[in-house]
Image (cartoon, rainbow, N blue to C red; front, side, top):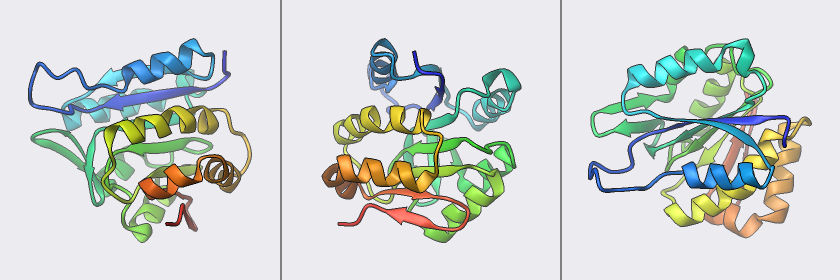
Amino acid sequence: MSANGVFCLEGEWSADLRSRDSVLPMLELLERLAQIKFIHRDVATVTEVQRYLRIWKQKRYSDYRVLYLAAHGDKGSITWSSRNRSGLDELAIALRDTAADRYIYFGSCLTLFNSDEVMRFARATGARGVLGYRREVNWLESAAFDILLLPEIANHSGRPSTVFKRVAKRHGELARHLKFVLSTSTHVLRAQD
């Protein structure tokens, strides 16, 4: 089993209660293949998100090095449910200086569209790297990319640029198609079209 884990907060993908959309089966697959370990929680309100972010900060979860925020998104924000949304500034306040040596991955459309805003978020949180997409992404394509990406970032101990380059080299066509980005506090790396 991997030494490091993924702490996933997943928003509601649909208002239809019959919908079974979830990233959970993907996380279970990666765990069964001994690629990651994970914690997964469904969230629908900003209060729930803030509660679990406080829990993620606890020392006993320090080996869960990837915060995976899986939900609908828009430029500079992530949507937990039809009436609950968090902007990057709001999330930065909740995570202030607690993500050192950790990655924050936005599995959401468009959230990392603005490079300056994303670098501010990385500085405020102390994150080793902030990852996500600059465009609207297809569910299946992004899920396939998640399966490839999550073990890389959960188990990477080197520089963020090294993991980005490795992912871009191995899976470049998909990374470019999804407009995948990785930001640190000082620069943004983009998978270019």
